[in-house]
Length: 552
Image 1 (cartoon, rainbow, N blue to C red):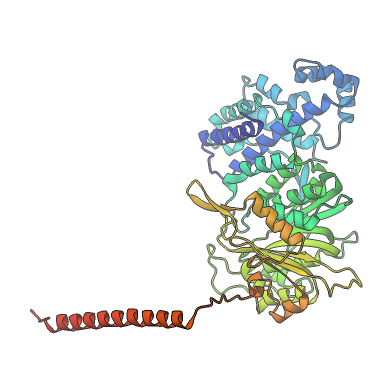
Image 2 (cartoon, rainbow, N blue to C red):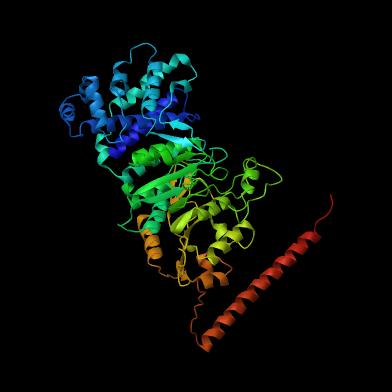
């Protein structure tokens, strides 16, 4: 079994444990799975780090048969010296925080209390680095007590033992040499059971890895000179788009900023950041409503912070009745308007196009010269009126849009809505963008269908991803697939970003002789005469049948 399969097996074993204790599909299951996975990852990362810090103490630990025992055997001042030498992105763990310690103390009474207190102690000792925040600056610790989710108190200790049992015979050490693609696949497997639209008011729509890759590659390209880039997602979800973007730039060459209203998303985003060596960005992962209380602002706190790159896959429709007044009051920020509250509210069929608010927020948050890619319902790209029409006109008239890709239907597992990705670049002051060309791609016919369980899905193949990226990056026109147009041409078509509206209509002509033409016409006449005769015969039969009917 290879490393990836072993890691998948660990995740599945943790899920089975939750099911065995009545927590399968429970609202708290995701907390348990992600926290235990992360606990194991950080435990092994800590062990790896203290064996490779280039100190005499590290040499002693590295050459021990059991590094945990060697670490526990150090004098308190020696442990402090070793912890001081660690990279800030490595958690600081005491001997009693290690999985081996819990394993060796399973037979003690009230093991559930020991287990939960260990989680809280690790979170407390690492609160400065390994935590996220809310918009009110409340710290969200990395770990929380877990056995409380088992309602039968008599089973909590056994539950804790079962979780530790799944962790003790697995090691993450060999994964530390792996990179983005490995952890992207692991993360996707980890959250697949929670990738639904049942997350409540703001559902966590997971962006397919292929779409995230396309967006990142087209925003960044292969520029090796990028340094100190600030990247942002105002509706970050689990962080798929941000991870792809950071990987394309280089994790050490960018800082991530994010915000999302969902507690569940925040917990999973935190895990994603740690897995992808982006611990330095944890403090910027904010839980809260971006539309009512945007957290990331300039140093003076008087305006929105502006970023080098922005990605977003916002919710398309949400009836935000409770916060509508607060959002609508920000007229300068939402210059194209805010969706009206519908007369009737149906939680299963929201009507308010909330994505239009996020679109305006993204445009406002772009630096001059900055680039953005945002997922929108395909209906937006041909809008003629309303808020959508105003935004579309704004990004065309102000030379902000520079491309659009219409994706295949069903490529997003959680929504049947056809989607497109709009690419934006805010012009720099004084920049002449009149000759900029806009690339429009219709990729709706690409992709292969496959089944996952009972669900019919669609995915883009590697060669199709390359085709989209190369065509867009090189601004190539291809019949029935892509066009390259000017802003004047967009204006002539009512600002439409639909590639299909710019394709040439081609009529194929076939040369035939007069005799061939006459022969075809005679053939058509004979066929029609035969069909007309048959029709008359059927009419006569129907009339005769009706005439023979009598009332009994």
